View 1 (spheres, protein in one colour):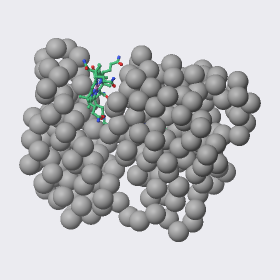
View 2 (cartoon, rainbow, N blue to C red):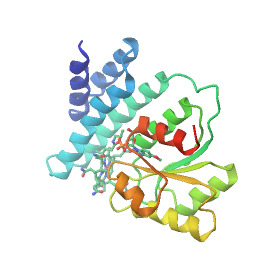
View 3 (tube, helix red, strand yellow):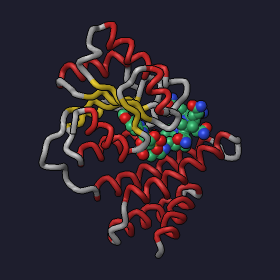
Length: 214
Ligand code: B1M
């Protein structure tokens, strides 16, 4: 199967909540040594974005959104388990979570996995995480970077709250911060004073390496 055809099959499998085809497509890409992150970005992620748009327009409802998310989680696991082992060189400590009020975690899990593969010691503290918990964990593990994911426009403000709370606690210079998530932009990162913005998992690794001077 041509790569473009595989991407289209991946998109359609998420849109039609077809678990069997989605899993077969992911496994096939693993067997055929296809770039798995390209398949995620140009295939499965496109599909879930389409589903999000259909949901926004009221053309599908929450049960279908949840079902597509289940398919997405399953292919995420297949892709993550096929990623190579972590780099020998250790590249710093990162605390990552999805901000308070937000339970979206598929992209965050992918970001954490790719950071691990690239030699980072990653502490994934889950979703719906309070600002203070990010900071407490970062202090506890002596992190280099605190990474926050936000998928809702209503929860992006907690990324700003992190910057403000770090300032208040006199810890802003101790940690680098990185923000990400579908509604987040470089402009938002600059506006709130975050040190970096990660557009996708590959970009998050690139930015994290730059933050620790690699
Ligand atoms: Co929700 N949801 N959802 N949802 N959901 C969105 C975000 C939405 C845009 C859909 C839409 O209407 N178009 C919309 C938000 C609108 C807004 O904010 N203005 C929305 C809504 C409204 C909701 C609910 C409120 C629906 C309801 O209950 N009525 C509810 C909110 C619950 C809550 O959080 N409190 C809700 C619930 C859900 C599900 C549970 C059904 C499910 C999530 C399941 C889960 O994550 N475990 C879900 C899903 C699947 C989506 C969409 C369709 C897809 C998200 C996703 O998994 N993308 C989403 C639409 C969209 O994003 N376009 C939508 C795939 C993933 C690989 O990409 O997460 O973007 P992404 O991650 C990328 C990059 O963003 C980046 O790298 C990742 C990998 O490439 N990245 C980082 C992410 N974090 C990073 C951190 C970094 C760096 C990069 O550094 C630290």
